[in-house]
Length: 272
Image (cartoon, rainbow, N blue to C red; front, top):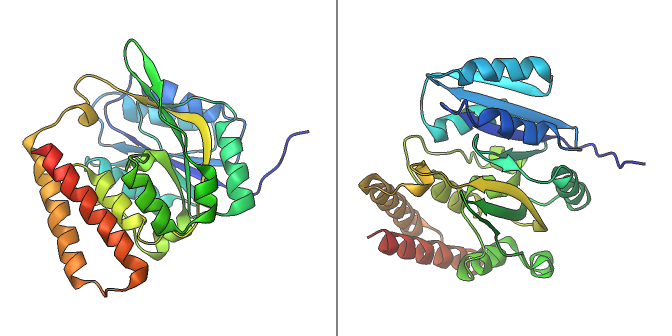
């Protein structure tokens, strides 16, 4: 007898000129045993047949909703997806990546149903042309007994956390309450977004399953570093320095700010 849940998960998939990857990506979602899904395909002004493929996929499954828009970049596409998301929780999936376990979302949503965390974490698998490797597991006991800011500090300090939005499932009401969207035109937008998100996270849970297949492709945004990346970090650093200076200092948030400034200083130095 299968378990039934009453929580919907909205999965936002930005689409831009990925006709050769999109079918596998979407099928990895549709074959999940968990059925209460809203799959949002945001066609960000593709010039190949990706937009047509989005519409064809939507005709095959009523859970798929397609948003067609002019090209505005990854942040803009994700924001467009957030505007139409109706799920209790929101996940992000890049259109050349895949979910690896058919029951992975079911197991993850079982935790969401029982615990109602602000953020749910899971393991990712790095997939390269000739090999793959799983990222290390989370300390679920630590997550269950500490505050969101303490967890954030520990994850960053131990380098156990990737700032990618794709590796986090977030309670949608938290995003709406604090208006946490992606800054348009910014590279490393996930860093800026995650740093703002974790300021408000109280309850965190994790499931140690290799759910997300992260494809490393030659020439992709994530594997190509340019001066624009460095300028984006410069912009993020300046933004958070200003917020830090304007903060109302108290014991509850000082650990958060220490973590943020330390992380950004390290990332900017690494970029140089």
